[in-house]
Image 1 (spheres, rainbow, N blue to C red):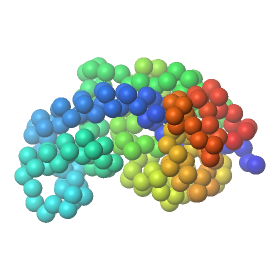
Image 2 (image 1 turned 45 degrees about the vertical axis):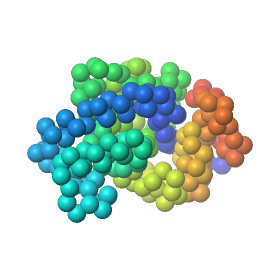
Image 3 (image 1 turned 135 degrees about the vertical axis):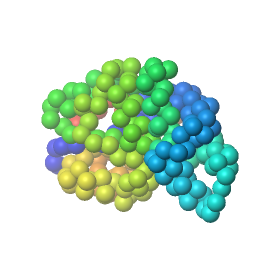
Image 4 (image 1 turned 180 degrees about the horizontal axis):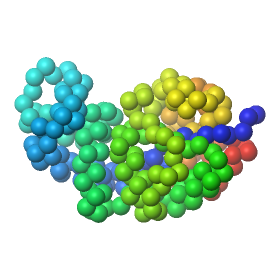
Length: 229
């Protein structure tokens, strides 16, 4: 079996706690989204994503308040909308800049990611959050700026995380055979899709309730043996 040449990692529940996203980031964006839309709607990038949200919802024309209500509902539903994630990322950028919070990253994840990067393994992120939001999270983590260890980032613009073709596209973008890439996640369905595309997989089961025998299972990054996957 070929050695692992690249590692693709999820964020929420894998490198970072689910509670940080659910209890810090989502409420922060929800509270500030109405004012953000009102004060930034004239900016081209914001206009683009507001129009994309309306298009995704199948709305031909909508008032500013209707779009705000739509986005708030999507936040409450945890909808994996590329438009919503892009707008959330812009709001979170203000929060990181103002030091309203720092992103949670597990110490074991930060340590092993740094070690793997130093060993010449290419590291990538694949998350439902926008690429901009991913970079902000790792740049402002409690473990310091980790952006230096990553070679690239992927979001739902590449495709849904539970679809095999998304991982095929990522392997093509990375420029490596899928078999040389290891995908890390806490979601079995995502791992199933990655494995169907030919990637190797490891389930991060920090919560014992998620343990399954269909993928190699570890409790943290320190338990990942690249020679055994």
